[in-house]
Length: 401
Image (cartoon, helix red, strand yellow):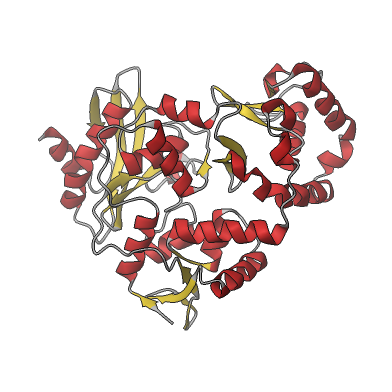
């Protein structure tokens, strides 16, 4: 069985994700589409303390671009892309909608068993289907109903929102894009999705396609890594890998340091992928970038223990509210907690940390120009460093230069 060194595995994984290439002088819609298609799935998240999460993977791989152009491409009502639970809430290619028929049907059968709300609110679900047929695409807040009242704190959902989300999981209701960052709900036929929605691709075939795409997107991964990419069942992922191996589309390998107890952890790679001799990259990674979103793989591949601390009380945070991993060549060399202060026109570095194996000055030299570029991309005039973190002083000096 082929064996990869730890360094080769990192370079293979990063190249598969689109790193190691020079940033283009101008990022056209075609380049944006190619980058999204390479990833296969672009996770969405509502936190926007620096910028929304789905903007960052493209900035990391391409450099500065127009976020409005990306949103126009991703959230057009009848555009190239569509939204579904393909990882968490995520954007996928519209043409891939049939690949998720099996999951929609799985959730349709499972949700009434797992969730008492579904069992108790059948009339509400029926009413929402009828209401959308009358009104056409709308956000949850635009639906007039006595039960469209938030429950509990400000983030609490109303019964209308709960119902729409269950219908969305089952495909009875689909996305018609977003307004601001609010999902617009519609019936499939209202956004031209009826034909794709009617295609019932067999579960095994769909999962095999998703698994093959995942191996190509990851470059190399253990079974758990591959299953997590699209949140697939482990048993189905293993069966798909065996079939793909028989077809010569994936290759089993071992990777230096990847162990399960005292034995090597089985892994799979894309046999068509080239391993670059070196990796040259400096990038800020979203907490939901595929390079780090599966924390076990980030630890195994990069020796990088990563957790976001947005739900951790401020006094107990180690690295910051929304710290971003910093990629330097083929290593995750540090993390930086950023906040866009748009009123003051300043990108605030609330903390910056170099990993134990990385000299703080070396991290600062690579990070400073990247932060200047990130600030300009966000239309901010300056970068200000607070004093927190083991690389804060060095970063302040590097930025001053």
